[in-house]
Amino acid sequence: MGGFGSKLSSCMFSILYFIYLVVVFGVAFFSWPRYFVLVVSGFFLSGFCFLSLEDKVRLFIRLIPFFVALPLSAHFDSLNLWRLSSIIIFLQWFWLVREDFYFHWRKILVNFRSEIAYLWKLYRVEFLWGAIIFISILSILKAAYPLISLRRVIYFLNLSLIYFPVRYLVKKKGKDILFSFRKDFIWAAGLVILVGVFQLITSYFLSLDSFMKFWAAKVQLSFYGSHWSYIVRRLNTWFAYNFGSSLRLRMFSTFPDSHTFPLFLVISSAWIIWPVFRKKYCEEANKISGLFRRIKKTLEMKIDWWTGINFVLLFISFIEIVLSGTRGIWLGLGIVYFILFFRWVKLRKQEVKERFYLEFSGILLIIFVLAFAYAYLFLSFPQLTTVGNFSFSQGEGLIKRVGSILNLSETSNSGRIFIWQETIKSIVRNPFLGIGIFNFPVILRENISLTKAGATAHNLYLHIAAEIGLIGLLISGWLIYLILKRLRFLILLKDRELSSLFFLLFFSLIWILGYSLTDAAILDERIFLELMILAGIVGGMNYIKELKSKIKNQNDKSKVKELKSKIKGQKSK
Image (tube, rainbow, N blue to C red; front, side):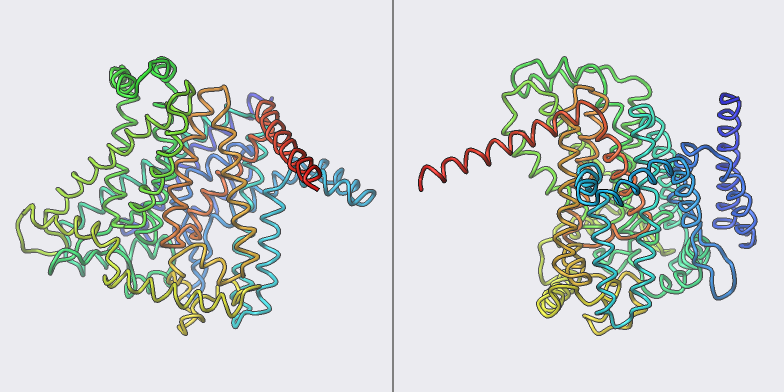
């Protein structure tokens, strides 16, 4: 019966996935009525309830870039399908763990202090996230618009629901579930990349007005609702102005803007290239002394069809990251390699897997540089106009955009500096609870409705401190540090397949955190969902015996250091 139920769930999984995508793409890109979305969403949710927890989570991952706003009425059409889907997944997970939950709850009532101490060791990520939510609730007391702040807290609670089922599945199934997740991330990334290619093609054949009518008034309306469609027709980041008198598309695919789109591709790139890092030549090349000899050995590897496809898909995704024109992404990659270089200097004479990963990651940099060359070629053709010819000189705007990263007088950069200055002043005035979550426009004396348009501090860390205070920033930093620390432990696992994946996820997370020095785009729902899934994977992997022993050994070493310092202090006295 279990086998039949599993096959039935897999069959329903495929049916729901393809029917949903056909209808959503028909509404977004063709002339299908928008109420079809309501019909297919009802069908989707009905079938979704009967899937197994694993299939629910996998389908959710595949559809993160394609969940659409439900047109419930003319004045309320922004409720996204992911909100309802995540609640269904969470409820099924809670039903499965209800006995464990009640068991711990009874123990808390009997012996509160010791049980909380025990749960803190197991669920530090959850405790820290709960503390952030609690501080966010307290910040409502300082908010000029408390109702908007309350809605934002509910929004983050809704986003965090997917963490728990993912953690549960990874804890239960280990490595096997990660291979399944990879397929789902690739499906999602592949379709997003295809839509990006289609979007690039339309930029060559449509005028600016026709492009805006199609992508803002039709596609964005279908995915995000009428209010967002209205916003992006007036305020958007879809075009670059470094190309003289002509505009150039900043690719965004199915995403709301050109900042969240490349972040999604950065996360997806880890899953795309993972099979290449798992190959056996990792061990063979790592045994050779001398950096250039190891590189030569690595380049002699045999590339099969699947490896080649992975490289091509990664190359196209990097081209699209460049075509998004998001300079913070380029800066973030520089920060990644700056950190990795110093780590490599420390490990260069040690025959360990991590050294090979550090050296092999150089291939990613080479691919990214080549992607710049191809992007330059694409931008040499005239876009969003009916006049003009191909000219290499037209691609020079890309070089100018790269050069403008450190140009403080450039309009965008000077605007950021002004916002940072105002944000710091606000933090000084409101250091503990900030100005209230999701009330950032108050700092710049702007209309509160601009929160929907993406009004932020253009720096994630300043943004957090401004909205929920320095305590909130401190706990958020602790949470990020904890996840990075766990990823570092996972890189040291003996299992090459697992360690290579977590090196790549560590690489992607550092890239995103570096980018976040210039923007707060990770607070977008689709990117935040991806990061919650990443956190769930890391949380679930903590139950691997090898990792638990490494953490224990690390804690023992720190305790020994503390004891030695105490002894030295007593001797000096």
